[in-house]
Length: 368
Image 1 (cartoon, rainbow, N blue to C red):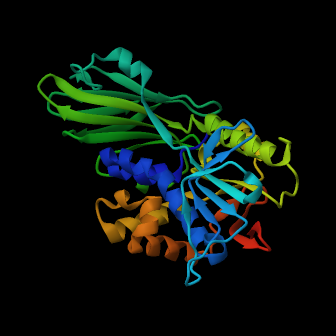
Image 2 (cartoon, helix red, strand yellow; image 1 turned 135 degrees about the vertical axis):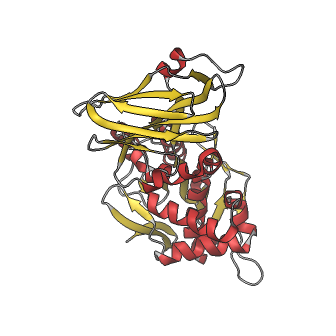
């Protein structure tokens, strides 16, 4: 099982709004990639944003960014960016860049669903007072952790641990509270109460379960227990991006096989939350795509924090490629961050070196 990303630990702080923030991770990846291109006029003048790029199958693949061989400028010599449309002849394409993010999927724990009745027609469940239930981790090669949870009519929760007779956790519970049960990559487990969040959790997070307390009433506690799964969609994302590379390469060169080193038309995949990508998915993209890069969780989090500091509570609505093009503040914040790293925000998974994108002699390169 893959580790849960530091980005997930960051967004969990937002609780219910975290779902909205979480959906913006992929958008932030695109905004930062856009900024890394836009800082260089030679790339920006060749940029085509979100066209449909047609492959050998004649399928139109919507890719985030394409760099074409002929630059376009206005009457003042400033770069002109193309948006949308279709590219049916890839002979002008010097690189196409896809961005993929696969986050943490939260699903209702199966045992929990079977144990407690649904609360009416909604997705929450009623936990009666004084009925004990367990939340456990049984990692392969590590110690088992079994927590015994009981809610009491005085609106408290008591938690003990089967493997540790000295362990005891008690707290008052209120509406919109939560309790997080963690498992680290060295198989230790902790409880994080309502007053804190995963942002305060230092170890690498292997697994966690989140007990969401929706409300407390006379009959018991309305709650939901979520399992947190590390990127179960990575194989599908790997297949999708790999097929685009193969399909377009076949149309351009009449061959699915990678040409090493590729210089005429470089297929590029940019990822984040890379801890969710298990080895088989990594192998697939390495086999099919010319260059694969990661924008680290730390850079993504830094970008989120910069947006939050400037725009305030609804900062995540600002994180779009369209706003990067039209909103001077969005553009400035993204460019400032990327320039802080001299454009080297792309971690190359082949040689573990941070690189930046450039166009030289009408060809795409990633250099350190």
